[in-house]
Length: 208
Length: 208
Image 1 (tube, each protein chain N blue to C red):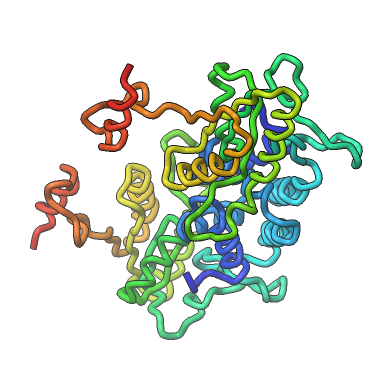
Image 2 (tube, rainbow over the protein chains, first blue to last red):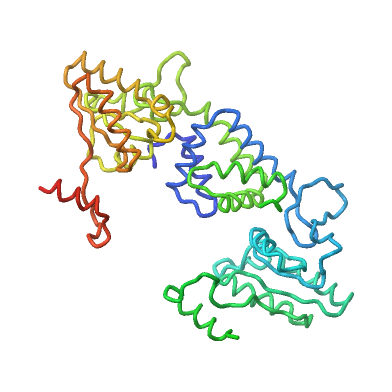
């Protein structure tokens, strides 16, 4: 890659840090940028630079929300401030895209708690970066107010997701909340022929 | 996707225009950006905004080069201004990344001509956007100066690449230059079991 001009190489380095992007794809991005017109680049640069002042996070579930609020007020998202949702049921998800996909089902009427990632076995500082302490206080408060909070662990069915779920279960244990995890089994439309062993084993264990 | 705040949605729209990026991946980018710190975002925004003033194109082959030149001078890249390369052999590639990969082989010692894309059957304005007119004048000049330019068509072995190569062959025909295309056959390390029919047919035709 050393043959590209320095400003292009710099862009490639920056794009390589984007999730799921390797150096070849980053180079395609850089040349895409180089071939865009000036106005478009201005628009992209402004959107990137402005995002942190224009977008904040819900003070309860850490969902991203547009910042129109007064500085000293803790903003709440539309779900957390909704009267028609059950605040005693808290679904814990890794990231906001997971939440968006769950909302699409219209099958859940509680509130969410976005962790902001997973605990990685390689990163010892992991748990402190996630919103786990805040989760503890949130469930604790529900417990004191009402007595029967329900927690649904909806982390991804991956090694990291499972580790994170186990960690949270341990953290929340003293609160004696009702904790469940999303069911495991065959996805709808999946083919038995191509399902992996763990999925089939889970489908067998969870048969009804 | 309608549940994301407007500034996030705007970023998602912008990232969706990046090559090979769909709305889900664009959303991952947007949240990645949202979680970066202010200094990093400044750096990204500046790199994107500055690219067009910092990078220009070689006046002969259209490779990107860092702009340190005086305004009125036509800049040449290191290959086109090199004394050790043969300017009579011109290899035509679709984009700069192709050139970079060919250079890595150290098997070619001529110059390049970057088209800046391919002719798409769906886009009738295609040929005028590519550097084909410039290619014609370049080969014409070589012809007048020297008499025997050689053109190697190194477009990708795809429908668009093949169409573009055919179009260029037709355009260059009156110049009576020696024109060849990259050999077709099995890639090194490919497995016959998984090779498609066209590749095998080409490998048979081009057997030595």
